Length: 246
Image (cartoon, rainbow, N blue to C red):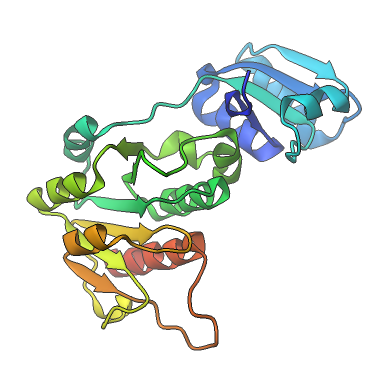
């Protein structure tokens, strides 16, 4: 059984119980932990008839080695990962102008989890990423996302450039972010059908991805730091769009 079969941490498991309890099969909790937060989680699991096992910390550590499980681990079904063929139906279900996030090759599960969390908070309708050289919805991603992975559709596509062209054909404007762009993100109109396109850690947006964007924009940097972590930059870009759209 791989680590990806588990979600762990009090907040992540609680959110999974609240949003998708039918995806959980079993929960293990630290037999030495008796605080109110854990009792509330156990009660919530009981309401959904999910079995609870009280075990030692060593058994918990064996299930997710090296991870901060906070005394609670849940065995869960894999979340649905949408494909390129689902894009049209997802867009048709959106009320109002679509608001999407595209991640061009994010590989760190902590970054993907943080991006999903920001996307959920900003009201993004779907997050799109390539299958190749990108992280999927692992247990680490779901823990960091704090329930957002269960709530925001995650679409993995085999050909990102083709999917970007599909979005453009449907009237969605693509705004890519790169440090050497000639204009600031704050100069752009982000109010209509929109996809914010973010690059990967280190290399940023691939050249082909840049060529498929309608606009390229940068974030103004006042200090000596040349770039931001992709999850931090994603949050800034999404909430600039939220500011304009509201």
